[in-house]
Image (cartoon, rainbow, N blue to C red; front, top):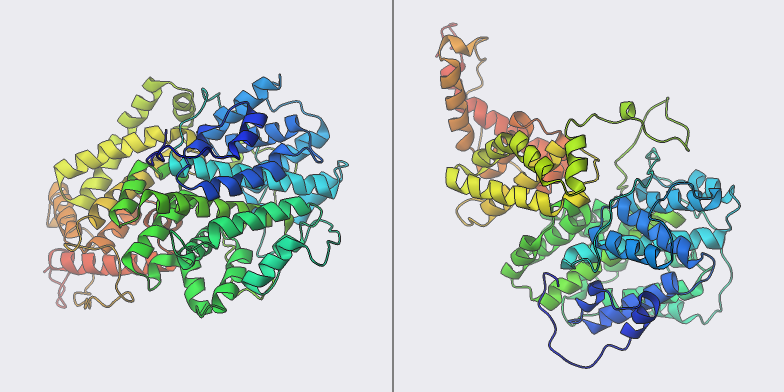
Length: 581
């Protein structure tokens, strides 16, 4: 049913009755979590407050929103569940031809769940202009957060769909990224009782009530459910340590570029004696922080699940087990990651302003284009990079195995070159290539087209190769034990190369020599040089594949190039007298 072992027979979980009443059955996603009843109970409270209770939005509209969110995020499990619910309600899976109000809410929900960083006040104003009240907009934001939560949870535990997955509809995602940091709040609020229990719990645990919760007072019952989820999932200390889980929230918020939650939790942790610099380093790049090996692996797991869901697989569960984590702890890590995605998504949607001055901004994606399309336009092929594989990918996602085989044939050489360059062993590279294509097939439905298919595939190959290299420890390592440059390398051969090295070597000999020198580089530099200079990935794509910040990647690339240049200098350089060496 999932990646995790099943719980032994025991007492029936009472909250399952709420799922039976709403769905007519208990979805596998929740049954697969019986190892942690308190997590199931917290999720049921969220489901009741956000989905089951019919406050402002009718059930059919909520299910349409969730179906569109699942489509935009390529969540196979949620698509299957959403398609079934629409069928039971007698509705079509088509998202076209909706009334203006529903269409505006659908666009807003999809944008909040899959591109929350781009939400601006103008997006809220546009929905309001369609006659939608603030409490309905808030409910839509909560649905977006719930959809993101479910998708993360289903992927992390490997829940098998309860029904056949329907064809992915076009959710019509649009929008641009904002320039710099922007804040709300975007919605109105109302007074709550001075003794409002959820706020009392927050005061007791944090010393203040974050603006995030204060901005949702139009839905007190939803605040109560969220606070209970934070208490049950994040603030407990019986499996993972509370600090470990709070680090997950920091790392996931950082990778989601959510400055608000990084600032809030940096302040909360400072009250526990954790320096602000340490918290911000974990959010910016946890691999550069001073952490134990197991804690670093835990954050690797959470960040991969949150940032690159298309590459997440059962192997990531096995890897975490290899670092000493049991299935209950892994399930808790998945739940914390899902909760972090929920909190990030809702904050983007409501625009809650920071409670404290952020130490730095995590919004890095900006658009500087004086010719942006109108807000209600849809991207055209000329506005996006052309992917020559797009048609085949679309066919493969609809179940055409021949199309997927053609993609394998088209890209097998490039994937093999990447892996042989990283691993230096033909048999291991072939095994890793098989793993790469298997992962790509398993997660093809999650490919969103935000990059070219070839780039996505090379990223999977890179991560597969990286994991194999890390498993070789202590033979070689991709990780620094200190700042870049502590390995004793100092470039010595800095003479100019000849204009035409083919004068000395034939093209084949040159290629062989360069490949040989590249393979002699330390692993952490070799991988960067291969991805940037051989596979032509951008700095951002290579950094994402390796889990590095762009500055760290550029530093390693420079050192790798210098090492390679020095190794090749005796063959291609001229001595001071102008004679080739």
